[in-house]
Length: 419
Image (cartoon, rainbow, N blue to C red):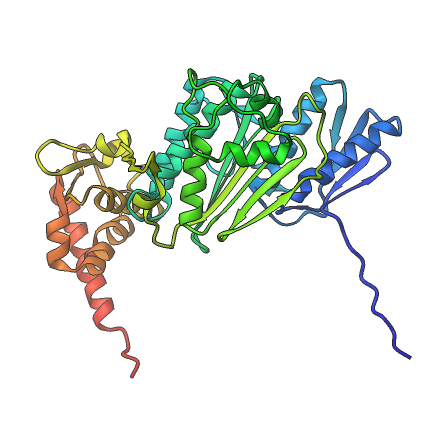
């Protein structure tokens, strides 16, 4: 006799009467499951739900947490009330329960859900992502500039075409896997309803609307937009063999490592407010030919990154003030962020960087070791001298730097050789 093993399937989102259990927020299908939980719960007469995430497994990713947070906001505005049971710290840190508008002064732009309602907020959020990512790790030339251009276009499109005042965004970086992830969500009229208002495009279905939207120069109204935001993002993700998923009006288009997948039967909040979710992920450890990715009307498109240009001293160098751009000079972590940003500037501009310590009173040995000693060993003496110009260092800091470099060299020479 053959005995079949029994497997118990645990959904990412489960409802038990008026209790909604969040078991996983690492896959996009959690959004559909949450929608169904609320809709069926409402049909059974519930208008108050307890959300419990005590069994939450694995990580919290933008492709699910952003849209569910936005749904909680939306249902709350419609008279549905929510109470919250145990919520793990990783989920609380995203501001999942109460996403905020970006105030321009936050030290933590990544791993949090942000609301935005104006072009000024879009600009501030994208600028903050741009700066923070360059400090978090090193990227190939043009990668961050191109992704930020796309993000800006997608977020701005929400304000123009969605018909709602508020939308949501979240970004993450996973340095261990060299993966970057973003999700933008609104619960407005959706791509299908938007394009149906156009005199130029008449999609028959929701999936037709999405596949139209990723084409060059497709927009509801060319007087308010060029229609290249999703097209440009699609090109970048396609070139980098990443993942792009666009969900709207009950349909989704997914590009994953060059293959496309369509889904036409997803639940929606309502026909008039189906919303749109744009989620993209890219492995920035791979070389990406951005010249091939960003072509409009057959011509290469060059992105100007004003943040990178702000370091240009007009004398063939980049000028980097440690005082203005560091979060302190006492820790190895702070030095690593400076080192990443300086090397990203060099990669983008192919010009040396003047690193100015003016008005810096003291640096720690660990800071000096991480920023200077390790970088010298990584680049080599001649390359370091060609690319890095140190300025404004007082005598005490010089001594600390020299000791750190000597100690790092001694430690390297004393490392055992494996034959």
